[in-house]
Length: 170
Image (cartoon, rainbow, N blue to C red; front, top):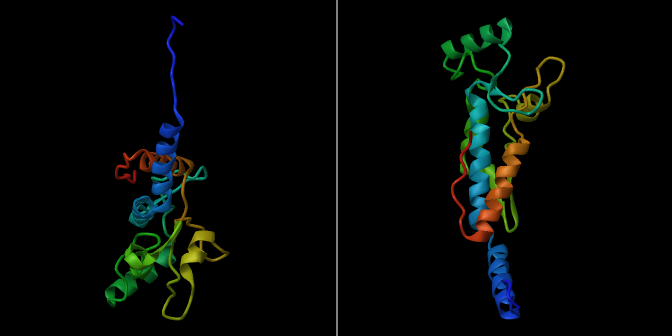
């Protein structure tokens, strides 16, 4: 034959599959990087940025109501709040709980990220902010965009290839 041929032997295929199986048996380095990335994305929501209807990060949140601003400023003066003008930040308790290592629960083949922090009166405000209700506007802060999921999928491919690099939260 005068053309070009490629020969693949079973031992080469076995070697490649065994390397991939070894990586899949220990996904901890990948999961650690993915969880770090999700936390970094979420922390961006606490600087006054929100997704728009197409789930894009970086668009400013709607301005807080005057009544909410007044309440928050009064709390700041009494030393019970850390921010007076930013949505999602009053005492910093929710943000702090999401920033902590305990917000990420690693499992053998995955991780969970979130918080069940409650107000002093036992009010479960993280979920309510994410969903909204009649009195509190929806400020969806815990989500992943399609682009972010694609970046995570690409990181998974890199991990299997042995070329995983640090993901950057845009």
